[in-house]
Structure formats: C-alpha cells, structure tokens
Image (cartoon, rainbow, N blue to C red; front, side, top):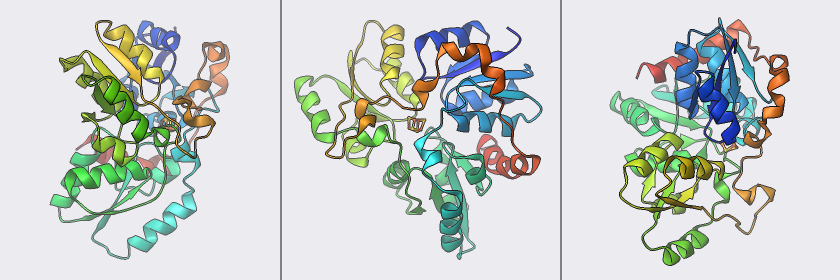
Length: 300
Ligand code: SF4
C-alpha cells in the first residue's frame, strides 16, 4: 500500500484488520490524530468521521488526508451551527477571564474558536488545568460530556447544547434491569451518554479508556454503553469475558436507537477503490486558527 490506513474503533472488523496490516492504527479520535501527526507517510486514509480527517489535516497539513466515506459525519458536528456557537461564545465571553474549550468531535470551523480542544480522555484534566490557571471555561459541543466533567471536577461552567445521537439513546431503567439480571456485570460507559447512566456506571471513559478498563478488570461480564460495534472488538480481544450491549429506546426513541452510529457505519470496504476522491481540503487560514486549540491539547 502507498498509504497508511487509520480506523476508528467504531468501524467494522474487516476495516480494522486492513488498518493494522497497512501499518496504520486502530484507535479513538485522539490516538488517530497523534498517529497522523507523527506518521512518516505522506498519504493517510481514515475510516471514521469527517472531523477526524479535518483534525489530521490541521495537525499535518503537508500530508494528503483522505476519508473512506465522504458522507460519514457526526451529529455533534452537523447539529452545532458555527454562527450559533460563535454567538454563544461571544455572549459568555463578555467576561475576559474565560477560555473556550471545544470537544474534538466538532467541525474545523468550531475548533477555530477554541483556546483548547479536548477529547473524552483528557477533558477533566485540561479543564482542571484551566481552572487552576484562574480562568473560567466556556464549553462546546457535547452537553453530556460537559455535565460529566462538571460532576467529576466540581468546576461549574457554561456549555453549548449538542448531543451524540447514539449515546443519548441509552436507557437508564433498562440498564438497571440488565444489572439486576447480571449482578456481577460491570457497567462501562462513554461520557457522551446521559448523566443518570454515567452515575450508575462502574467506569466512565473514552473508548480506549473503556477497553483498557475491561482489559485490567477481574470481572468477566460487562454492560457496554457505547456504539455496538465495539462489542465485536471486545469479544475478539477478550474471549474469556462476555459483553452485553447497552439497552436503548427512550420514549423519544428514533431509528438511531440501534446503538450503531449512522455515520460510522457508512465506512465500508467497498469504498476502498475510490478513496482518493475524498481528500480533506481546508484553507490555510482555517488550519492556522484551528491548530491553536489542538496544539494546546497536545502540549498539555
Ligand atoms: S457515535 Fe456519536 S459522537 Fe461518535 S461519530 Fe457517531 S454521532 Fe458522532
């Protein structure tokens, strides 16, 4: 292969296998971003969401970055309008002692407004760091992650309302019902899920954090509150353990309550032949402004 291939944990096993064989990486968004920045390859293909390709391009603008699916996006980028977020930021930034913190699951345009970008694996630590420096925080784009960080750190801040269409569908009552049936199972959750479920969880963390927790836990059974595709990877990696998909289906349940990201599932191996049609192109000005918050995260 003349390119390396990065696959997010939420894509199908065949794509993850190709990523490993290409010398690429299977990881969460932070791991993919670091890999793209440090890779010696001049061409990188990403099976994931468009914001991951934009992040790679911002961090490695000299490289050609391609998306396997040009249509694979994310509700946290599609549903957060740039002008709305800028207006929100301007309103709360009337106090100059505030720093804008933006979740990595955001468009390049939204990142261009950020002092810091964070992922679910480092949001608590970076916001504690900003707080220790004496600044208040303005946060976007995921309100469930915001509520989790506020609860975990005790630091209050304003946040913009956006949600992940997959994680907001997990259902507390059904999860507790499963726990009654499987009392020894640990509940392991991604912080994009709602706070009541996170409060009931034994572990809350990024996708890679969840995998590491399960790896090191002595438990043999887990209720997994994240995209269902992760169950396949977990079953392959830890055949001695069993995994129960987190239950979905709130009153407002929609077609998204299958616990499968409608964007991530657009990544299919049949698209491999034409991926060079899907190069990520960003203006130098946007790359320059969006890089500030990302570098502040990576330098942390
Ligand atoms: S699972 Fe949620 S946060 Fe992740 S890409 Fe899909 S919509 Fe976005």
